[in-house]
Length: 354
Image (cartoon, rainbow, N blue to C red; front, side, top):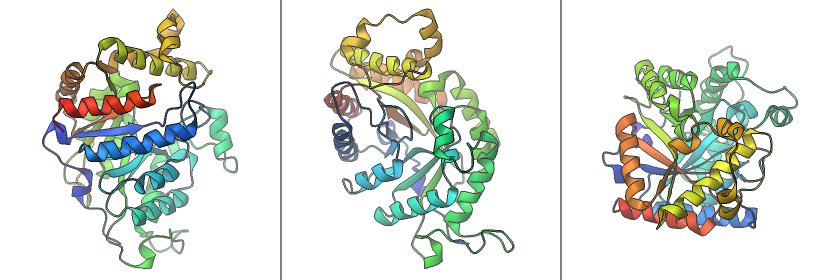
């Protein structure tokens, strides 16, 4: 069995300024192109690295015109060429969509490109609707949450090249990978979730856990408590380690920040009601009157979103970290403006003296 990624790869920072990370959905807004969105992601990654953010993750979504992050491994290779120090990862790879061997090969390749700074975050949802999920794995039919623990175990087997004798994949090797000889490490594996299922599994496996507070905020504290109660020390992690994902957007005025937050809210409503599209402009989002049905669909999205002037954002982020006892907060900003996203990240960094 090969040596797994050391505990230090997960972080373990002590101050809030060192415990901020970025989640990028590569949002494509009305009037913008995917090329512009990807260039903005590269600028955001370089900015996050320069300002001392801990890690930069991209999320996997499919069949959503307003989100261009359908291929995390491809985007991460692009970002690896744009950066030198910041940790890069998936937030996450939606494992039901992929054969574990393919994921192991992709992320071992990324680890070879950016040694010691690759995170492999795994989710159990498809990141899309069921029709698209079937199209993604048409030869096997869509995987379900029931297969997730087995899929994770299989992926770890390929990453570490340690299937036992008699296993049907004993002679199957992920390449690049340990079969080629000592390489100095492998991607750091995380589990992601928005409920207690992955929280408990992450705890039992002794893996770090990231929770999607930005769209499941009412379940954040119970899920993190379940993770900590379930945690068993492992070769990669001696103590529980948690990240909380939160929508966070800062601007010079409260009105500007709320306008950008509303673009994310309207995008969410349209997707959840089966009408995905490009991220609307602030003008369109501001003039939209959310119906009672749409507010029900939106749930607590706006309630749990953090937006405002830099001081307000910092105050609310500090409160969230204190309430959840998270080791890191991961800031998502699925908003319309490209330059505005860069400005928001800079303002938040300024507010923490980063």
